[in-house]
Length: 330
Image (tube, rainbow, N blue to C red; front, side, top):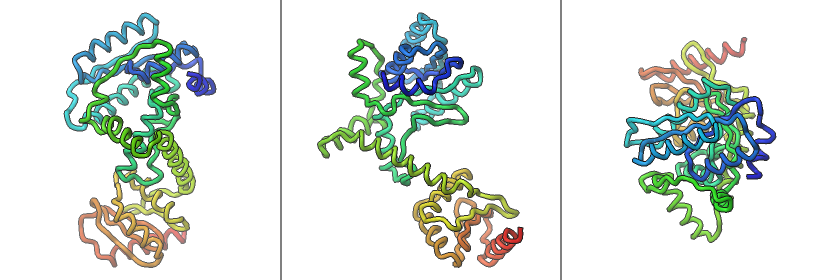
């Protein structure tokens, strides 16, 4: 618990409350007791009953009783109408929505989550298998934000085995959710099948290496974010324009990925490589239709115009040329 105290000691504002997302499992239990030792007098606890199991409502009542005995403000919600498909993602969004509603009512300094090193490793491995770009392999950060809500993850460099060992030493009990081992969920299969197989195959612990991969990915993302900080998807009379001049290929890829994502456009790998090749050729004109947009490349600049009509290359080239000339005269 020393590392949790070190993380919080330089960040904690004793005049503002903290909100702890608490399931009663080993991770949130470990974090809760670390907060009790600091101490953190303005702590609030939030619990989400997903309603997946019959005993979950009893566990929620047990947690409420414990917090009332400790005089800790307790907030809880039970989810209803949870769909069978994409259940995990649905519940994740519902949890975040619940936490956001609490932030609207209280001046919390941050939301504390119990993610630990094994969670980070699982996320990095999942993204690697899914083919994420190098800058986006990072799983989670110790400090981040979501819709303006500061999020702290003090356990992110602590392994699950260390947490369980510490709880056992201190004789601290915790709840166990059997759905965390259910092979119906991808996370569970990563945890119970993939990671043990990789450990056995390589003959060593791989959690540290996956955590390191995540950290290096975030370093790369931070660097690329700085390189493209002044480049934005600008609005013009007929669509959008993205200046890709004087950038390296990896910087252009990052620029296109991040800026078009804001328009809910996720460029497939083959199309991305084609765009990058034409951007490098500088003078060659290229156009393609993708998701109700005509995307054109000319003079190391990317152009987007929303139209379902088959616009002739000459028409798009004329618009692009006029826009470039207009910008040079400004």
